Length: 174
Image (tube, rainbow, N blue to C red; front, top):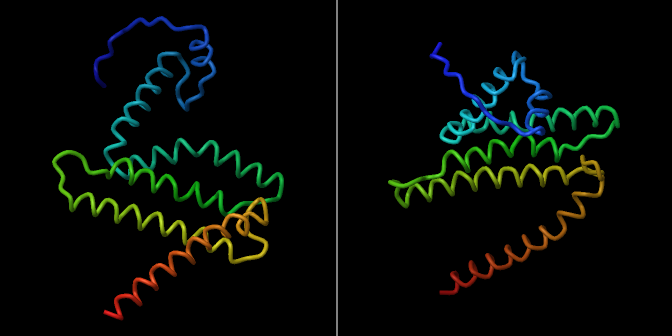
């Protein structure tokens, strides 16, 4: 174990109250809790460099909210596949955005690859969300949610399809 160096800090009453109520497995004393807070901050800092570590960090951050939501779903008897899908996919997508972003010393091809990877993730999620609109009622807290939200998107998709068809027919005439 590395050598420990004692330090002294001044904390506000709010910070002391937070530290006293902060619960971390295995951390009982204020020193233990502060070491855990520092370890967690170090993981966050270093985790942004590695996609897998970043994803795990994001999942750990979302876990308490997801756990509470799942408990409430059990208590109320309603479930949203849409919300659960976001808990599943967004940490994965955000970790890719944060930890895979090309930095200095990279080339244009790295930017193209980065964008392609992100678009693959995003459009995969869009397809999964569209799948939720296939059933009636939709598998969401509000059974009409998918119908309400997908209608304008489908209109945009129709307009895009018309634009692509007009481009395509213009090429065939040349």
